[in-house]
Length: 312
Ligand code: UDP
Ligand code: MG
Image 1: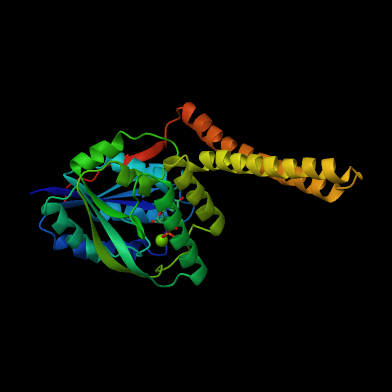
Image 2 (image 1 turned 120 degrees about the horizontal axis):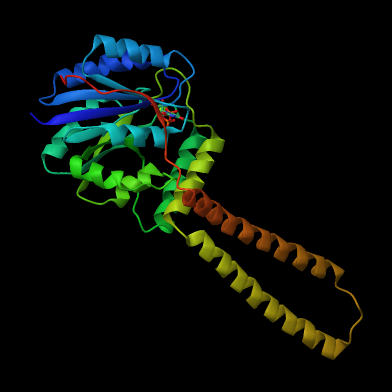
């Protein structure tokens, strides 16, 4: 029987973890595959780990990894994917926003020959209008800026075949924008649509600050367009100053020079100063990424590891 591993990154999910495991259990009982579940505790500081330990004791298809601290979801996910065995892997959030009941549909597409089957949501219930708007704006600008097409309204919930997983395992960059990496590897990819539910309990770890950082991360790791933008803004302001300079020169030649123009002067200085600082910031953003990458640090450290015993 083909083997399927379900990788679940968890960070402070004590409120929903048991319910999640029960719902997941019902789904995998009906799958014609040998399934195991791998929980990755991303340095939780609530009861999450003790719940995982009790799940380990109660259910031999459960495995667990405990990271040495909170490394963030992308790193936790990577740790799980690195440790996962089997012919295919499903990545799912523990907060029940990704319905486990969709897994059979993902598996079906995999068995039809696809390597990456991602779940695309058709509604975003329980999310504010502002969040929906910013998410849409993000996907739209990503599409424009980057050569890697990143599917819209798609989270990390997806199935990966063994060869897609092995390919992904070779991408060891520190700036891990997973949605982008999943697409970048290529292979045969397809979507399965579903209704996104509101979070079932606990709170989201993504505030707008973290989301904005994620967006910057996404854009800078998959596109160098902002660097080019600095060039275009520089060119445009150089052209504009040339025209303006010509006009000032002609005016002085015709009407003489009454020494005025303080407002224009200060305006131009401030504007160009601003543009220069912005361009420096953009360069700095890329330079900082280069610096983090060049340190070649491991992506995570594992504190405890319990591989799944017998799949069910
Ligand atoms: N998560 C994690 N490490 C973190 C933050 C989140 O492993 O530092 C896990 C979290 O427990 C959940 C999943 O990643 O299973 C998605 O997190 P969340 O629901 O906060 O994100 P959202 O659904 O808002 O994208
Ligand atoms: Mg969530």
